[in-house]
Image (cartoon, rainbow, N blue to C red):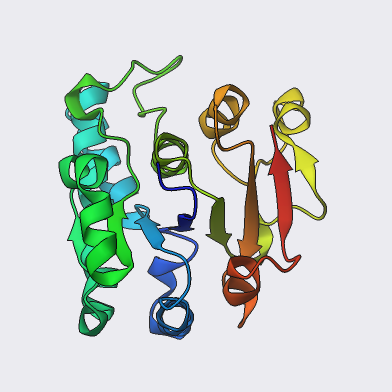
Length: 225
C-alpha cells in the first residue's frame, strides 16, 4: 500500500536512553530526509521499561499486562521524538491511527512517529518461558513495515548491536547461544513476512550512518529472510 515508505526503528536503550548527544544528531538526519520518500519512525522502550517489568513481575502481573506497561515507555519516547520534529509537522500516532490513517498523515508532513510495540496489549501471546512479553519493538516495527509494504526497514543500534557482516535470519536463529541484533521473535517473523524480506541494522551513534542507509548506500549489516 505504501511501497515507498521507509521505516526507521530507534532503539530505546541503545539510542534514546543515551540522551541528547546521540538522539539530537539523529533527529537532524531525519529532518534532512523529510523531503525524500515518506518516513515512519518507530520508537522502542528503554531502561525504564525494564524497571516497570521488574515491578510487574514482583506483583505477579500476567504477560498481557506487562506488555501494556512496557509499551507505555515506547510511547513516551515516541512523543519525545515527535516533539523534536514538530516544527516540520511531524506528529505521534497511536496504534489505531498508524494502522488505519497513516497515509493521511504522511500526505500532510511526509513523516510520522509511532510506538514500536505491537498493538496486542492485554492480548499479548504467552511467553514460551516466564512472563516477559515475546513481541516487542523489533517485532512491532517489522509487522507495521510488512503490513504497509514498506520499501525499507532500518534498525538503529549502538556499535555493539550491529553484526560484523551481512547474514540471514536462519543463521542467527540456528545459534541459540549467540547474540542476535534484533529480537529472535522478530527474526522468526521476518521468515514469515510477505513484503519485507530483509532489514538493515546500523550503528546509530555514527554520524551520517542513517543518512547513508536512507539513501540506499551500503552501511551496517543486512539480515535477509
